[in-house]
Length: 157
Image 1: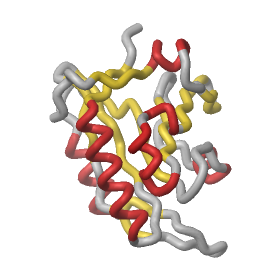
Image 2 (image 1 turned 180 degrees about the vertical axis):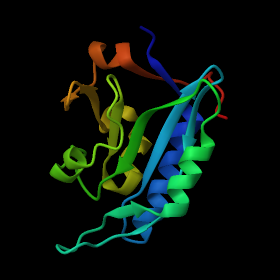
Image 3 (image 1 turned 90 degrees about the horizontal axis):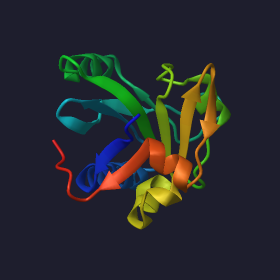
């Protein structure tokens, strides 16, 4: 099993997107696809969603859902969801109730402080792996490194 290799530029692009959303008082969400040509960030159209309890959540629009469907090339798969939270990085009950990806081994990356946490690297983020019907935390360290790593030499696409 090979780890998901994320180009440094992919995380820089994600950080810029999340910080921009955070400057407007909202979280952001994106997907990471992977295939023969490596990993790529896909940011779908989204809009603020405050729900009944207020908050800073977003929802992917219908157009965004279509963008996500059309963004996959043959032999590509969405392998991770990456999204921001306004404060600490953790998997919230809303994240658990709306897993987005449900296949075995899928990753969920939660970026703290509206994306600012990525300025300090992936170790500031919560990373969870889908196992069966639940998410299991992968704290920074050797087990996470087996599943996910950042490579400054890898090219973003």
